[in-house]
Length: 308
Image (tube, rainbow, N blue to C red):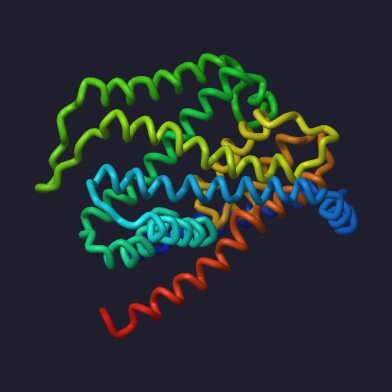
């Protein structure tokens, strides 16, 4: 039990150290002055569009919780959902072990609204599943439309049959939709019944999941310079791969992992410009929300003090 408790933190730390070591070798020829210059060159309009992309992403994340609550037939005020979802993801994106850290925050928030531990567990799992659905759906679309995106990972991913892989991923999404259409029977686990999502809920998942990822990738896209920029779809494809690798590594905030994959995939661009764009991403998508979330948690816990 003790070994299991420390396993993923150790894996995450190892991933960070190894990625930063590899990234150091990728950026040996880039000076700090070059990175500063790249950061300064980001135009005000690009900052505005990156901030708008952040708002879109976090707005969609609130939609994750709203869909899960609809699935559970639970009504919670929209403002509470938005604040709770924002806090949950701002913490989990930075801390790592997103399922565990997100569950802790949600348990405190939704427990105050009368949800049971079992319901909160389903909510956490459903939100994670919505994200996975969004990743599979968007990855399939990108591979069908821009199959050459895998060429950028020739040393990491096989490039053959990229479009076929895309169609396969879209077929999996199709099967998920069909399951809803034919109304598969519920699954009972230890007295708790899991129903197959209805078609309206599945449709919302297929909209909200991709929107969150589209918004997050947009932050990087708008922060990159026009010169050498391969276009939004390519950036989206790289983001999908890098973010997935970062999540699998369990590195807090994907530190080092995200940068390594992007620098490798955008080899035609100035590495300083790529790092500057990812600094903007970390600032808007991770650090600023994290600071705000800490304040929200403090205010919430202070308001609850003496009631529990």
